[in-house]
Length: 52
Image (tube, rainbow, N blue to C red; front, side, top):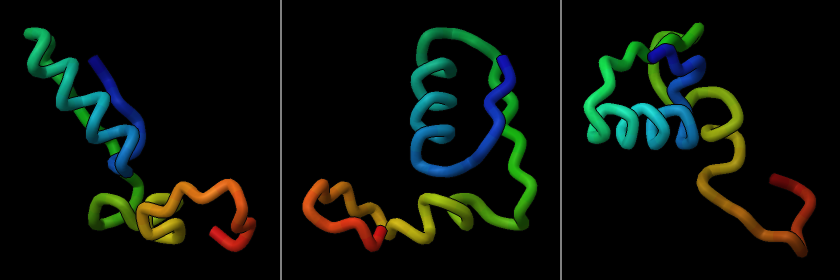
């Protein structure tokens, strides 16, 4: 399996695919994980705030 993006969603997806017995490869264009959307949102999911 190929997962594109090593943010929160990509790593969670890869983790559960791996636990289900799949061979998983995660591709990320940055040098570290979580440096794009996951970084900017800082883990916030707040419908009342449009800043993140």
